[in-house]
Image 1 (cartoon, rainbow, N blue to C red):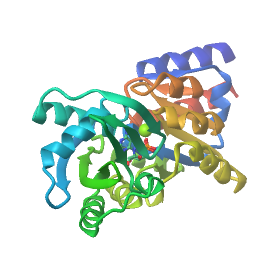
Image 2: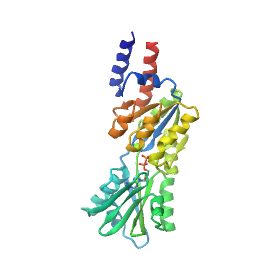
Image 3: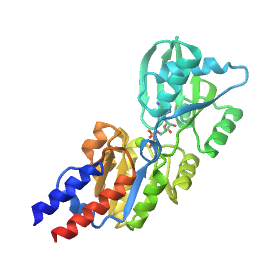
Image 4: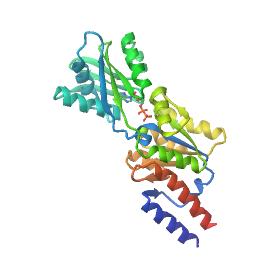
Amino acid sequence: ATPTALMVGTGRGAQLGILIKGPEVLESTRAVDTVVLDKTGTVTTGRMTLHDVVPAPGVDADAVLRLAGALERASEHPVARAVAAAAAERTGPLPAVADFANVAGLGVRGVVEGAAVVVGRAALLQQGSVPVPAGLTRALTAAEAEGRTAVLVAADGTALGVLTVADAVKETSAAAVARLRGLGLHPILLTGDNAAVARSVAAEVGIDEVVAEVLPRDKVDVVRRLQAEGRVVAMVGDGVNDAAALAQADLGLAMGTGTDVAIQASDLTLVRGDLRAAADAIRLARRTLAIIR
Ligand code: ADP
Ligand code: MG
């Protein structure tokens, strides 16, 4: 009866939009008691849009947006796509970038029209010893308190403004978290974004534990730490920066709408990018196991 039960399990999985890497994955679902959820692109749509431009005193808002947009055109990050799209729409064709560099989890750097431009978190400007005026810090903090991601723009060592972007929580995320809890799993939100944004998203979907401001290379350590505490961890993610954590988790689930790297690192793929399928997958796998036994 074993092979038949497996086929039923995986056939039903395909119907539900769940791809299972192999039958050995089923076993991993049994003891899972914690589910770590990546924020951007997993709990939220990841389709960010520019919300606001706050220029430093005496600086033109469109000029800030244009410089940032030119630089962000070279990045695939959801923040970058929002900034580049808005800049092109509002200011027209964007200038070229030279010496582009991506600083994972912090932002981007490059040369635009002869100026050394930086777009990213305050920590990235600090690395370049760029002072941030109090007014911009206030704008940044205010945006984050409202649950929006905010990045700074600087050129040649001077902070020029703050860009805020909005990302919507997926309609299905709150229901998904409730289903995961129903299976006895404790949800944790994990993100490289700042703590205020993380808490705001977490509150919206019913999560009370948040691990924020985690650099891409450190996400895997969060999973390891939980495992060291004796927890059996499922991780759901979509990004290149989630791949190591997905591989480290006892059960890795990738959003089918995410990157190939994340999908390859995972045991299960949620084809439609609907987080509810994470709960369906675990329930289905456990039920299939019960039939096999
Ligand atoms: P998440 O873990 O939520 O997927 P990331 O680790 O990709 O987030 O990014 C963390 C933060 O780093 C972003 O919220 C943003 O503030 C900053 N950041 C990363 N890449 C960029 C970029 N291309 N432009 C501006 N800011 C960026
Ligand atoms: Mg992500």
